[in-house]
Amino acid sequence: MKAIVLAGGYATRLRPISYVIPKLLFPVAGKPMIYWTLDLLKKFQVDEVVLAVNYLAEDLRKAVGDEYRGMRIRFSLETSPLGTAGPIKLASKMTRLKRTFIVMNGDIITNIDFNEMLRRHKSSKAEITDALREVQNPSRFGVVELDVTSRIIRFVEKPSKADAPSRLINAGIYIIEPSVLNRIPSDRKVSLEREVFPVLARRGKLEGFTLLDYWFDIGNSSDYRKANFALAKKICGRSKLRLGKHANAKNLKVTPPMLIGRNTTIGSEANLGPNTVLGKNVLVGKRVRISNSIIFDHVNIGEKSIVTGAIVASNSMIGKGVRIEQGAIISPNVSIRDGVRVGKGAVIHPYKEITQHISAWTQVM
Image (cartoon, rainbow, N blue to C red):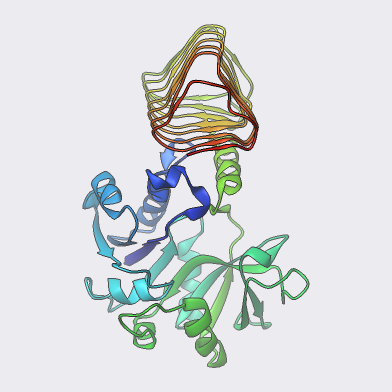
């Protein structure tokens, strides 16, 4: 089976980190986002994946390559944004989609049962089966109304909470018949939700499949934090922490859940967790305190520093005695001098050297 992963977005709600790092290479619980998707597809015996890319496409291509775990990886480049259906049509020009195939958003992390979804799709004789997820507030998403047989009869894009026909949202995962490609015009922006779904719904060819497995839609930094911490808890299980290969951590206090990446070194008397994910090749000094934070790969944190509720991106150097407060975002390749305080909600853009205190909610550009 073949799959198309929609990876062409600009990740505007994850800026400024996404100015430098493609969204699909953001680490989630110690693994870049794209590999959560590829591992899921491999489990379902997908043998070819087309990544529909646009922004920072070359960085993603260099990282992923043209093969992963025996799956062929192709890249379909949008020279201009094509919406949610246009990239599917474009991808179909580089690989033969003669049989049922999968399409999914690249910023979704889930353990959906594709075997059951495919079984339901085939028995329903739908042209598209759309995975659905029940949420408390559906106003950020496309919301569906089902009939008693799980056919989708109506699709409302981002309604107010009061106007939503249900709490079932489009989960960004589809099983699609090749006939759908004939319904997507070429060479222009096309919306799957607004232009394709309504036609299929009227013809009774749009099926809903409600997923009960875990599902994370990583649209913004809040979603990103929630996904990291929930998956860290799942990975740790009953253990206090999960320690990566060749990691060195002794004489420290840990509050679970806590993930430590490979080749990471933790100084003595460090106090880590809860809800903390350290990437690969991280160096944490003595008596450092880190909680409710995500630390990307290749970050140095000097002794006696305190990081609380923050995101610190790759290749950043945090000096000694630095304090980084709740909600702060430190972009890639930032250097912070000893003793500096970064206030609550402050955002530091890439390649900055910080030599003085940063007030709360400040943008350092």
